[in-house]
Length: 287
Image (tube, rainbow, N blue to C red; front, side, top):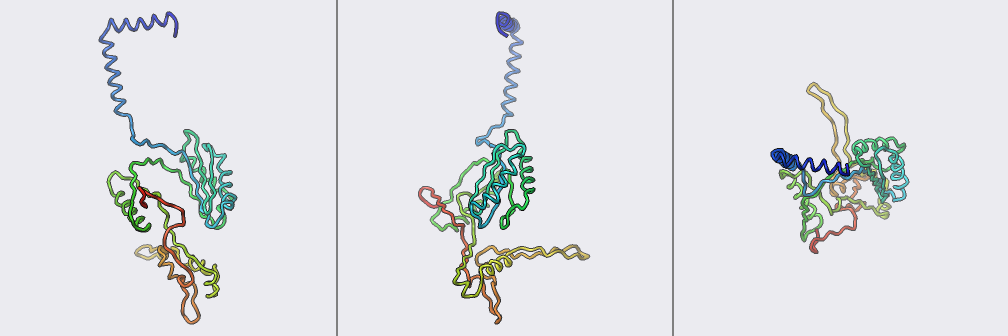
């Protein structure tokens, strides 16, 4: 409201409070108390938690080239999820052995509902994932804010440094108030099995013979159950091998004279880390 009438109204309010100071003081007290109560209920964070607003689809594809990953995984997932309600943008990365699709959700969209719709869309794809690819993993990352970053430094080997960091991680998780501890800047464990063509010829073996022996000798299998009067007993074999030494004892072939050819006879088994170009330094020292 503008003009002379507006000025008259404002002048009338001021005159009313001048003539009645008790009402003015009461209004001031109400405003101060209301402000104090509102301030006490405000949530404050030193490191604000920001929701990422994304849903990620990861599909491991061992042995595949980036072109094969793009053709068989990322492109198909992109086409399947673009029409979903709540999807704002889709970005994908096709790399060797892995396809990653990051789905950005629209503002105010229910991220959990979008995640469920994405899972349904991926499940409806025919002949997906491709042969030799692993099952897709769909996740909606929870908002996580970092509080403390701890660098583990030492003049020791990478394995010893990794184990020390894991021990610190376990100790921190036992502390009250600590809900999440994650390792970063490290390489994943890997057991590599390298077989030379000359060795295979010497033992009259094929690469498929070695691969099948490893595949059949390192797995956990459910063997059914036995029902008795005292209850039900589940049968299961736990033969998943976790160390390079355990893999070395795998029998690849049994000879007619009763002797055996083990994996250590035909392959170099290395228990270490994945081959990545990764160097982390803290004040010039390895971490």
